[in-house]
Image (cartoon, rainbow, N blue to C red):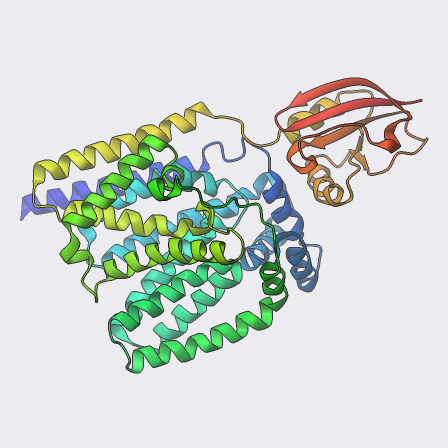
Length: 458
């Protein structure tokens, strides 16, 4: 009895320590880098000074209607705490933190508490997920609501209460309004119910509730759906042969080496636990359906119309992968092999995270360094002469430094001015345009993804 209490106490202490360290890591250097283009779009669309309808239009303009729910949450957040880019990523970190208690609840629902320490460790030290906690996009929010979805779906299967159908439907509606790829989760649940021959009240109720979800989604998102369906060219490249060797594991786990370790471990554990994982009525089987569907349907759409399969759009399958890995390890009969796999996967994950934290690479544009340089120069006039880029970048720079004078046209009043080029939004070119021929270039300064050029009016 005393031994069991001591073991329980040590386990709880480990979990508490793990959560504290995991939360601290989420906050570490979250604001070291400036916002990049996609984050600038989120920041611009969620301006709290605009009405909710105007925000809807802005989100449709720059995000094709995706991440609508996140945009509104961000708007409310800014309305409460101030429209400041320096605190913007705290909201995404908040959703990353909310995912932690969800994992506790989920393992309890699945009756796999023994897997929680390893699952929590692999989740908290996944540097790919950590990077999206530090990005002003809806990805950490997507992870959070996918975990809520899993919890409510388990309740629906086990308890069959009306409230469970309402909660699953509500989360699915929120998820699909935030990103259309969330429909893969709903579709996988539908497939799971069919395979289990659940043509009963559960299935009928699920269908009826989701007919209502589809109707609400269509009413709200018909413009964005029309826009997305009519897109003929997209930034995502066609799926290469390399994908069928890797399945984005090198992205999900941050490197080819670590991705290979996870993929080999994942395949091996599915094989060793095939009787458990392929039981038609088990939640593990649902997770396998979700993972397979998330790869197959976007790939099929890419063959029919345009490529849409990319790692970040399906990052909600990372948690299912981690659940299957941690549960698979826990169910191995060979304790020696079990310990070897845990040590290899845990040490490699932890080492990768530490390496990326302390390496601290600058991968995003250095707007702050550029405007600090400009502020200490002979003029604070900045030219951004691209109509689309102007309003997005101006909004951000003015919030960083209200004293800047940002223009999109040259007049004779400016004796000196800086031209600022955010290279990814200018096709990595900062060449002189025709209307700049009357300017004499005096100086050029390079920052990461940013070039500023000082001109004098001739």
